[in-house]
Length: 308
Ligand code: FO1
View 1 (cartoon, rainbow, N blue to C red):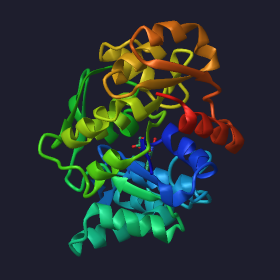
View 2 (view 1 turned 180 degrees about the vertical axis):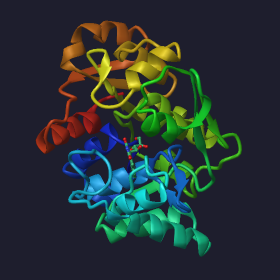
View 3 (view 1 turned 30 degrees about the vertical axis):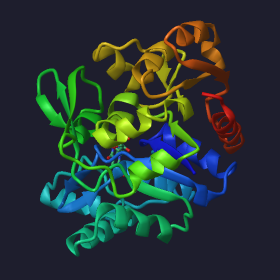
View 4 (view 1 turned 135 degrees about the vertical axis):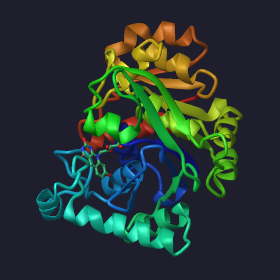
């Protein structure tokens, strides 16, 4: 069993590559739920949906989130009521949130509902939220103080400096059922190339998960989301720098040093490999920019075979 930690962007691409390398039932994805929010009374889990939509081949290619071929009649109709619609929910995407919200209201857990949604999209791998308990990423920004994650990421276009990030509820949130055992029994644990602070960070903020992964350090491989000093998409390098980390593969190695025995970096950063190893983390240099499915599969092969 391979366990992969994934956020919204880079992680799902690598998992699509892993599906070309391993039998899907042997893969468990732990998804970030720190980005979750309630909008218009609906429970939305952006990173869980990005994983499912990407792996089902249904992700909107232009946006990198939501569904391909989407229409926006409901959001446009909200204009009449001057309804807050800065967080855009496509007409077909709404079905996912309607279903999830109803099932949660029926008393189902987020894990159960996420499994139902993944199966409804024909996925054979397991997609599991980090916890069934609520955890909310809160970002403190200049001028507005502490905000829910999506206000920072979407409403403010993550264009404002951040002075603090915390994961509200993480101190009492329990790992999703079975996750600790799955991590303990896994042959390989992969920390995907998602934002270390706000995509992987919430997952690691659940004590039972962090402890379980740290105990498996020699079988944990992380893939740097930072290539040549910046992230391919999103605010990872800004957040790393604003929160006092080096915005480079060395900073990522240091950030994951107590959890991952190996860090995979892109060829662009080959000259930094000695500094990664100086952090006590084995360094593997390869192509990590997954411009197409074949590159994602070859990166997946490297990740599966890397000796941590
Ligand atoms: N990102 C945006 O930049 N603008 C949006 O309006 C937006 C809506 C949205 C709706 C559903 C969903 O699953 C994701 C959505 N995202 C949007 C992306 C989302 O903010 C990110 O996927 C994650 O939260 C960060 O990884």
